[in-house]
Image (cartoon, rainbow, N blue to C red; front, side, top):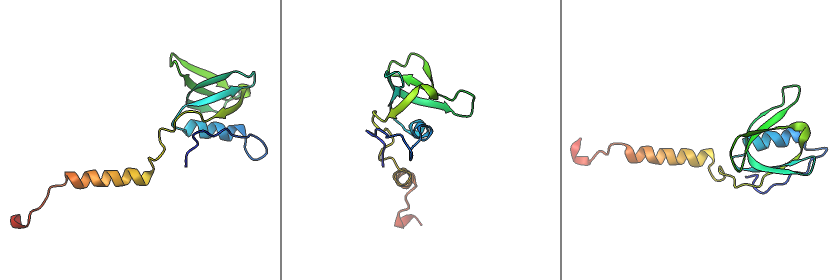
Length: 113
């Protein structure tokens, strides 16, 4: 399952803090919709809700410097970028590593025992 393309509907069953946590774990760009109506697209690399003024940090598309946006400035977060982790589940990773290990293992021919 991927969050790619998801526009959360905040309300009784979904809080902004939950969406921020999902956006932090998302391996793609998001679009932060601010309460003033402006939008910032980029990659969220940090968040802290355990401070007096909770915030996120993100790199915008230009990547010039990290931006700090307070939770109180955020209306919503849209999952607009490609999910770079889609299809890369733990099982797929494990299978690939096992296959690589098998290919590197020394082969034993019947006549060499």
